[in-house]
Length: 180
Image (cartoon, one colour):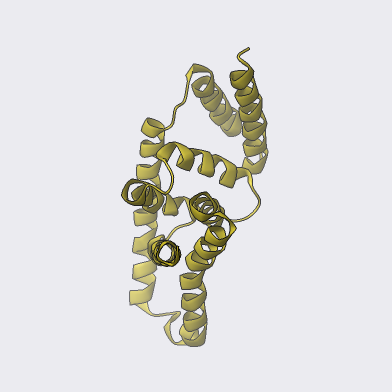
């Protein structure tokens, strides 16, 4: 059990170090964990993403908590959540101490500027992988297209659209379970 906790810590610390660009940037790492360790399936990962997206808080941290809980209960959730946050905490503490020296440095500006396209590429790769690994059916696909178009047309807060998606997904799930 200690070995599992240590491995959880290492894997989620690794995610915390290398997933630059927001919560969705953790997904390639989580897919890798699903394939390497079989702690959860890619189908469960899609469910984790859905729940994490509509749950208050950062998506990456919610995903870590959910993955840790799926792997090893409450202790796993605490370890995964702590270890994914720890690198950022360490980095921010160090950077805040030396920020004034480097805030106008052209090399630092270039590094940060170059990380943005890399983050976009990671998110695009995750989107494509989700498209092919999720089990969308016809109604879900139509709902996805309609909600994307509605989001563009009515220009509402994305949280509002996510809320509608969550409610409709819940209703579709109930309908699917009872076989209507």
